[in-house]
Length: 324
Image (cartoon, rainbow, N blue to C red; front, side):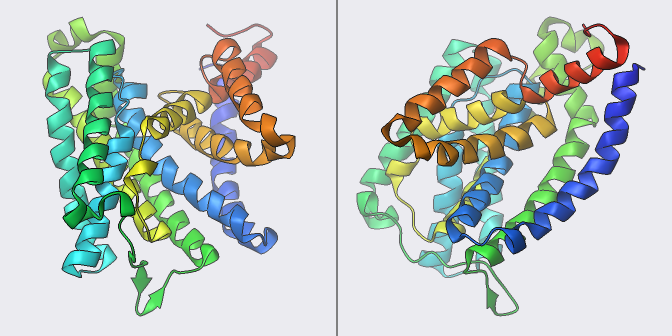
């Protein structure tokens, strides 16, 4: 094992508990409600990016339909809590069911198509979802949106404020992070990487290519749908115009910015890309151009993502030469 890798492993053991402690202390230091709201959104997006990482980062199947998955999860939670009247926690059950259904519906086409054709399929899926929700006025509220979505509550305490929801979503993200870590380092995770690296040799190793792809899509859909549910109960209002192709691209950028296939890359990407536009607003009308330019620079000069770049720097400093 390389010295840099050993040092990186030791630093992770120290850094992870430290980051968790710092995360719990953040609301005590940052008093601005808007900043806490942005962090809450970053946590929600991170769950969706974890899911996208399974299918795109690890299995190598391009998915540009995360916004549609996110949207259906949000509307499933919103409709079951407002129309049926069940609690937000119980509504997570049909949300998971919706994720499983989407995973199967999107997973099977991936057995016959790939590359740009699969990307177009997922893009079409998002657009179809948005159009249906926008025109099904009697059930979804149409362009007017779905209103009065209740907040999560425990023993009568509703997580209405940004700070209270921050602590709730932080605990939820920690749980999802543990699940994600276990999946990445499990038989499933190794199968996903095998599908990405050498799909032709996968079945000769006893791995079902079809099962691996469908499993990856299903995990991505369940994570994305649950993220949408948390979004719905945080916002309290849904509108189909929110869930566009731009949102799907945002999730892809988050994953690539930190490092595709890397769990810690997902965390870094989700938070930097969520906070970066807000930090650049001081530039006024040029902030969007600056944001796009920064993302483009990273895509060109650091294609492996920020986490891999930092790891390579550590390896280079430890061994005196760059790693392969």
